[in-house]
Amino acid sequence: MSGDKEFEPNLKKGFDFLKNNFFEPDGMPKYYHNKIWPVDSQCAAQAIETLAGYADHDDEALPLACKVASWWIDNMQDKDGHYYFRLYKSGIKDKTPMLHWSQATTYKGLTMLYEKLKR
Image (cartoon, rainbow, N blue to C red):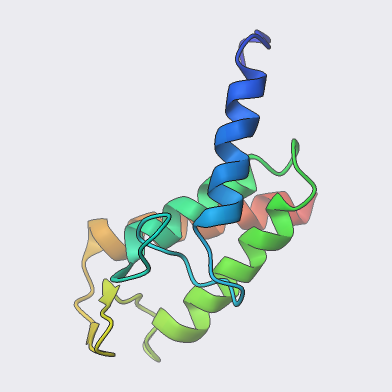
């Protein structure tokens, strides 16, 4: 980006917190660092995008992005291809195919991940 490395330690500290606190072992993204539910499309999409974007700086970022993406596709993609909005603790899924909240953000994150994997 700008080449200014003054804030790199802060960025690394924040990224390490994200990496170590916002994901379940199977790749399920958490809503907050201390709260899983609801599992939210924005959280998953942003996690995939952030992890893929930081992959050049952290060796664990890309594998974790793949794990989150796999969990998301396996658990929150409908057979017609659209992504669900939310999964609640009760097991209820909000399957509404919202363009902004579920589809566009997920495709952006997955596209960034794909671009990193192609390299």
